[in-house]
Image 1 (tube, rainbow, N blue to C red):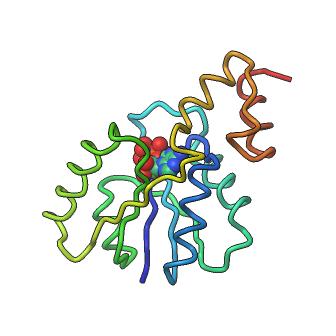
Image 2 (tube, rainbow, N blue to C red):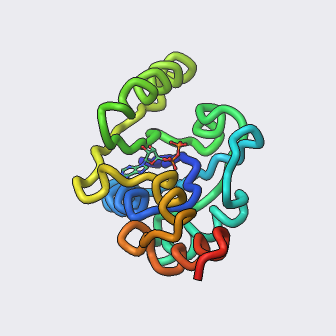
Length: 159
Ligand code: ADP
């Protein structure tokens, strides 16, 4: 089965990497799909986000990294995906995720959305919180791999 794991990944964190690892162990192929959305303000460009994920997932034979524009369900059909995977952290993720999965199901019933519950270690972790902490010069080494930490610090002008 082919799974798509879509998101902003601005930037990738240990929470995302945990989901990718779990998917890679279960699916034949995992496509990590970086949303290339002009309307959403991002710190890292699409190219930067894709290359950071590629670097960190190069050890997996069945993980591919790509970017997409427009409707996720159209991209999923184009890539012949069976499943869309999303991570669920807190109850606060639930309402939006349910709405999106029902919408996608209506547009394309063959593609299922599956949710993986976040590891408890990462249930509080998001790219936004990492960026916020970094913007105040705080410690982020528990949240992202060191190569990503360096890139974030460079963006925020920290040493
Ligand atoms: P989006 O803007 O699509 O929510 P994100 O990069 O924030 O993009 O998240 C992409 C996916 O990864 C979402 O399904 C999100 O729930 C999941 N995710 C983000 N952080 C974590 C985490 N710490 N643990 C598990 N899943 C996560």
